[in-house]
Amino acid sequence: MNESEFFIVGANGQLGLALRAKYPNAQWADKDELDITNKQSVEQFDWSGIKVLLNAAAYTNVDGAETPEGRVAAWAVNADAVGNLVAVAAQNDMTLVHVSTDYVFDGTNDLHTEDEPFSPLSVYGASKAAGDLLVSLAPKFYIVRTSWVIGEGKNFVRTMISLAEKGINPTVVADQIGRLTFTTTLVDAISHLLTTTPSYGTYNVSNQGVPASWAEITREIFAIAGAANTVSDTTTAEYFAGKAGIAPRPLQSTLDLNKIESTGLHLRDWRDDLKDYISSSN
Image (cartoon, rainbow, N blue to C red; front, side):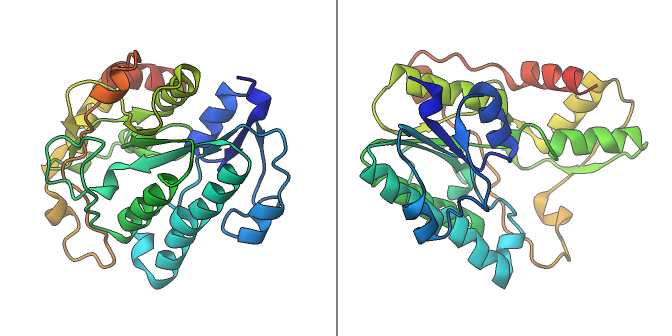
C-alpha cells in the first residue's frame, strides 16, 4: 500500500506524530485546512487519491468533558466529527482506522474483550463509545481500542520523571490497573492491520506484560531512571476526594490481546518499551 494514499487526521497529537514518523509521505492537514467537526469542511475537502483515513483526533480531556463547554466539545470531536469521517470514507471507498479507548467500559471486568458491551462512566467515555458505533457503520474499518497511551508530548511518564527531578515523592493511585501503550506499539499494530488485512472490526491493542497500577508503574519509572524517590499508594476515591468536576475512571483497564496477537502481531512488554522510552528521553 502506498503511504502517499494515507491521510492522518489529528496529526499533531501523540499518536498523530508517531503516525507521521511511520508514514512520512502520508498526507495530513491542520484544523485551518480541515475542520472535522464541520460537515461542510469535510465534504468539500479534496479526498482524491486517499485510500486509508487514519483518525488520531480525539478530545481526551477526561475531566474537562464533564464541564458544559467540554461536554459539547467532546461530543463534537469524538462523535459528530467521526460521523463526518465515516461518510466520506464510505463515499470514497477508503479504509477508516479509528482509535478507541478503555473508557468505553466501566472497568468492572478484570479483562476487556472486543465484544464487551459498552458501559461508559464518563462523558468522555460515552462520546468515544458513540464514535465507535458510528465507525462500525463504515464499509471498511478497523477500530483500534487502546489504553494509557505514552508518546511524544506531555504524558504520565514524563510527569513522573519531572517530579523525581524536583525531589518530589508522589502519592499515586494504586487501584487503577492496566498496561501502558506506547505509540510505537500502537503504530506497529495499525501498520500490521493495514498490511495483513484481517477481518474488519475492533482490535484491542496495548503493550503486553503483567498489568500494573499507576503506583507500580511510577515505581518502575523511578527504578529505570535511577531515581531514589518513593511512591505512596492511594485509592482513586481518596485521590480525588473534595475535588469538583472529576470524571469517574474505570478501575480495570486491562485489554484482552488475543485477537490482535492471533493475526501474527508480537506485542512488546510495556516494561521493555518503558526502558527504551526513558533512555531515549534522556
